[in-house]
Amino acid sequence: GLDYLLPAFARLSVERSDVDLVMVGSGAGEARYRALAAELGVGTRVHWVGYVEPERIPAYYGLADLLVLPSLSEVWGLV
Image 1 (cartoon, rainbow, N blue to C red):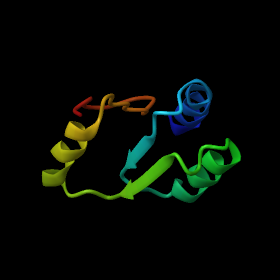
Image 2: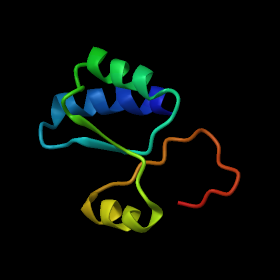
Image 3: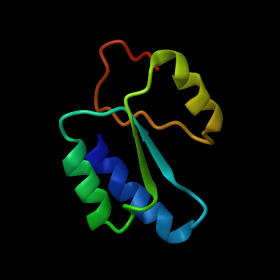
């Protein structure tokens, strides 16, 4: 769902200069999504954290105002 999330964030960022997007995790498509963020003009407002140890994830939840789980389907749906 990052193909939807990044353009949506780009639209939001036009109206709101006080929001950033923190991407936790990594995968095979990361380079493509980084390029898409740059193409959309939000490359400096998207922060790529990479893999985070499970015990550190609650700290990221605590920093966030909003959680987006951009998957298009979830077998278990556990966040």
